[in-house]
Image (cartoon, rainbow, N blue to C red; front, side, top):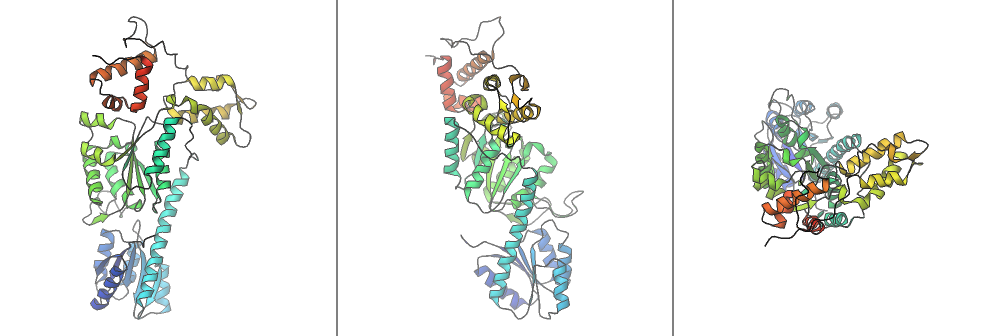
Amino acid sequence: MTSPRIKVLIAEDEANLAQLLDQFLVSRGHTVTTTHDGRAALDALKAEAFDVALLDIVMPEMDGLEVLRQLRTEASPPEVIIITGNGTIETAISAIRLGAYDYLSKPYRMAEIDVLVRRAWEKKQLTKENALLHDRLARKDGLPEIITQYAPMRAVLTLVERVAKSDSPVLISGDSGTGKELVARALHRLSGRGGPLVDINCAAIAESMLESELFGHEQGAFPGADSQKLGLFELAAGGTLFMDGISELEPRMQGKLLRALETGSFFRVGGTQKVEVNVRIVTASNRDLTRAVNEGTFRGDLLYRINTISINLPPLRERAVDIPLLVEYFLKHFGGTTPPRISPDALEALQHYDWPGNVRELRNVIERAVLLANDGNITARDLPIGPAAPARPPAASNGGSGDGGTQLSLADLERQHIESVLNRVHWHQGRAATMLGISTKTLYRKIREYGFQRPK
């Protein structure tokens, strides 16, 4: 593994010593900013995120202990190493009580500084990861696995394994409930990236707050911003940022996101210091983004930036072969050591249902059925689902539009819609598949299934 590139602030009023520290830490591969008084150090620490700060106690304007005291109100302060030429036990105790990582007396060896900086950085990383882990555990659904024997879905998992090690952006598309978040987690887990996975649902956050959530804000940036806040981009440094509902971004936010992705840097709300981060972006959408670009609601240049690798997830209605496997998994998950049994008529009903909510809906149905099961048995009457999808009529030889006055079945409506889209794009099947939100393989299968003939 390569050495971490640690962001260090040096606050030292002795210019020669500050220069020596700067040169030494830069030679060790770190990014260093140097200040010569306490006020300048505090301003720099509030304007930019540092990993470690080396603070001399005796400085003009403000001493190192006062800088440390004021840093305690920040959202994610750096680890602080206090340095002084007049070290006493009382001073050391004061520094530790204020939250300093360690205390170093002059004269010191440069090797000591190097070891302390690295250990302080490791502590900060652990603190960040623990906070994210607690947040993740509080919202953990306990279902991290992707269970399938459906060939197209297995091909998706193979693709995930192949591209996980890359840093290229990934766009995951598919209907709601098809498992986009699970795929994003698999991408991160297999990536080998040392940083955390941080996620955000763009559709669930008000536009006025989304910029602050993503990029953070400085103290006083807007009413209620009483302290500095780190955004999700910074929290995901070295890891993966998963942005679900990317299609819901407003045009202004699309532009700011594009700029951040192109430059690898951004400004916090109300900030003037550029923040640079190394983050892999994984996005997801249940809408056709190509259509959104054509409609003018999504930027084409942003779409090109986020879909270097595209992964499309099939809906559950196309994965009927997986329903028995998923049902068995959910029964064990919700039923514990003695899960209820499911009757043949219940399993048949589940396999013939259309599943507009996909795997998420199936999970909720089984959870409810387990809770209400009588004598450990689940029958079709215990399932809170609507009627099964009607059987498809024989495929029309000419791709006709139905029988006129009678009510159309779901299959008839699907057939008419696919035929309409094909005709609209002059049978360009790649474009038609994109407009329909399905893979080209699924479209080819539908063309054969409905007996469509390309017009001469």
